[in-house]
Each structure stands twice: as C-alpha cells, then as structure tokens.
Length: 314
Image 1 (tube, rainbow, N blue to C red):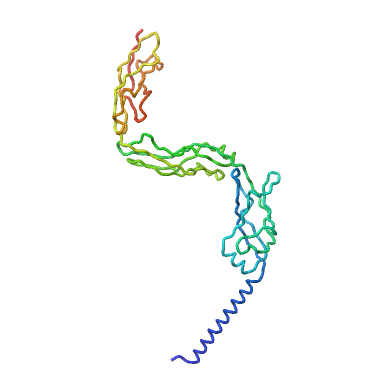
Image 2: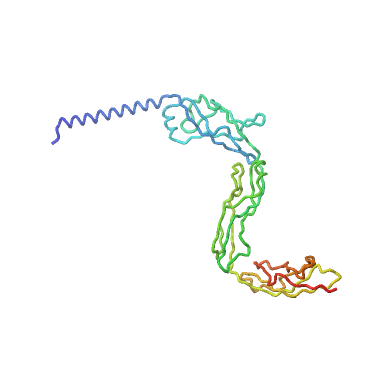
C-alpha cells in the first residue's frame, strides 16, 4: 500500500514541473515576439535570361543580409529554404558591364521575413558576365559497335535521328566545335531489330554550350541474309582508239549477301563491272575489274576473279 506522504510529494512535483514548463513557454513566446537583429546568408537565383543571351558568370551566388525582425518570424525562416531572385532582364549597364545593386529599402526577403527591416546587403552589388547566344548546326556522330549472329545483318546500318542538332552558346565556344557524339553503345550476337535513345555530349566539358535536343533516337533494322551470285559480262572502258581489246574471261561472277525478302529480285543486269584500260601498265598483262553499279539491297560484294587477262590487237 502506497505511503500517503509519497503520493503527496509526487503530486506536488508534477504540479511544479507543469508550472515550470508553462512559465518557460510563455517566456519563449514573449522573447520570440520581440524584434531583434538578424544576419542570414541567402542564395541568389537568376531569372528571365533573354533567349539571345547566356550567363557566363556572376560575381557571387549568395548574399549576407542583416536586418531586424521578430524572433518568431526569424525562427520560422530558419526552417524553410529561402532564395533571393534577381531579374536579369532588369540589370543596370555601365560601359558594357551588367550589374545589380541591392536596395535595403526596396528589396525584401521571401517567406516569414518578407516584412522585416533590412539594414544592409553584403556584397551590395552583383556583377554579371553576359554574352550573346549564337546557334550552330553540327552533325551527330554515333559511337557504336555491332556484331551480328551468323546469317544476320543490316542493309541500312545503324541510324540516328536527327543526324544534325543545334548548339547554342558563345561564339568563341561554338567556333571550336564541329560535331557532337552519342554515348557509346555495343551490340553483340544481334538477330533482331533494335531502337531506343542515346544521350549526346562533347568529348570534353563545354559548360557554356547547350545541346538541343540533348538526345537522339537510334534504330538498327536487322534481317536474315543469304549469299548469292550472278554472272556478269565485263564492260571495257577507255580502250585506245587504234586497237581492239579482248579480256579473258569475258564474264565474271559477282558474289554478294542479300536479305531473304529481296533474294528473288537480284538480276545480272543490275550489276555493272568494268575493266578500265586507263589502268594498263606497260609490264603487266592483267587488269583489276571493278564493280561500278549494284542494287542498293545487296552488300558485301566481291568478285570471283581479282584480275583478268587482256590482249590488245592493232
């Protein structure tokens, strides 16, 4: 059974602690309602940059603000992210230099300190290095490696869209850039068509230049291929006017790879293989035949003979 004296002591202690907490809370609230001097460091944000301008640098990205505010407002201010926006379209100019001057009477902080009395900004001026924004079109260079499964290939190859993009930035930077690159990608044992997007970048960091768009689509159309061949007559060109030329053999086999859907379309007349007598050497009796025309849907073209014999008859 609890001692009545101990119960009385515990009850008195709880009452004392409750009164102490209430007094402390009232004291804190009274202090928070009083005005006092504050000093805060506020990050700067830069807004309304013109489309034809680029911000190369600013002399600072934060400002220390001193002033007077209620403790209650300051207490709330410390718990929220704050910023001070500077409108770049309203900058002052002097001898080609752009700058913004803080005004303690007109400029105000955001959040709970909106109504505070500001006494000073440090620094009191922000200087800006602005440049004109130029545009330039450059090609996109895809970086990729492909290995196909046996019997598979691609007629069109690896393609990106768009294949040229627009750069925006200072003229001095754009003059050094002739192309942009895709991120590197590798395909192995490919037997199906693929497509996706790739990020664009420069070989080195160029922070003042913007890439638009900064991604391109890629596609790789894959087909099943088979080998075919046709017999094609050799055509003689640049034969001297005072001689008759003969070549042996008169026909040559053209060997190629073609996707299955186009295999039946391939004809001998689609190819043109020539022997050029401007390439004749005095000590040689052979010439190298060359494929001059072929269908767009065949690839890996080669000839059954690397050289042919010729004879000139006057």
